[in-house]
Image (cartoon, rainbow, N blue to C red; front, side, top):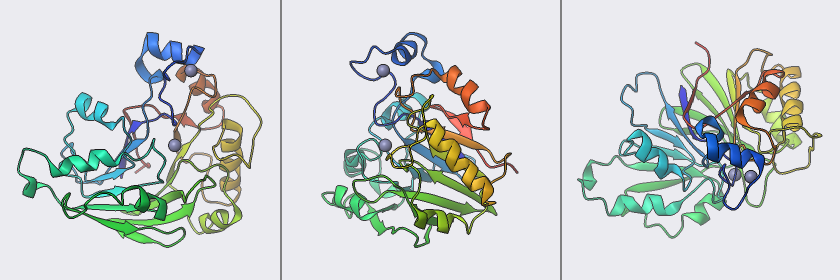
Amino acid sequence: MKFHILGSSAGKTVPRPFCRCRVCEVARNEGGRDVRTRCAVHLYLDGDEDCEPRYALDLSPDVSFHFIRNGFALDRLEHLIFSHADADHIEPNLLEIRRTILSDRSALPHLNIYGSETVGDKIAALDLDRINASWHLAEPFVPFEAGELNITPLLGNHGPGIVLNHIVQHGGKTVLLAWDTGYWTEDSWERAADFTFDAVISECTTFGPGDADHEARHMNFSTLVDKKERLTEMGCITDSTPWTTLHIGDNGGLTYNEQVNLGGKHGVTPGYDGMWFAPPE
Ligand SMILES: [Zn+2]
Ligand SMILES: [Zn+2]
């Protein structure tokens, strides 16, 4: 499994509209890894040689930017797995385009869409037959298959609505995807104990200094470190398990390079738009 992080920002892009904070200004003036768009991740399995993904996790309104920049058409997409229904993770109008494309519509593979009840509500207005798609309800703690993937959803501590953190398994590897999660409640900790993770992608919405907050609906860096330490104590990960982050806002007050310095002290690699990430061989 190989993950291509296309969108690494939290609900607001970096730079954020109207904002003149230092982090946004560095992103505006210097570009590069300080510029972040909203959540979209593509997943490639071994043997997927071409550059069109068959699997995607979330589909933010900004993803068109990456289609244009990378030359993606998304016309090989078969499985679209959502974390939750917040606007920075799902843009139903993008799916609607499948109905009106000018190239051969019958050449598009059938699209399977997976998500919680609240995602189902969000896409309820789409005519799934006309966009050649089908809907699969995913429920917390109930494993399901998405193509060649086995997925066990945990419950993110993030409302409103049901937010899923997905444990994705394929080819002997297990990767935890935990964004828009906060610090888990006990039911998710208990279920996580059944797994050993080869790699983790988590949110770190407020990537910067500050005290841990186990009640907040997003993680800051100290909360992330607490979560990482607890998973280590539980034997789910080791100190050398690769851990990267997305869903990073200007909230933490740090530039990308400053995040690298802070993260490095705790074995955390800040993610960025365009980053490739894979569990070790
Ligand atoms: Zn979000
Ligand atoms: Zn800002």
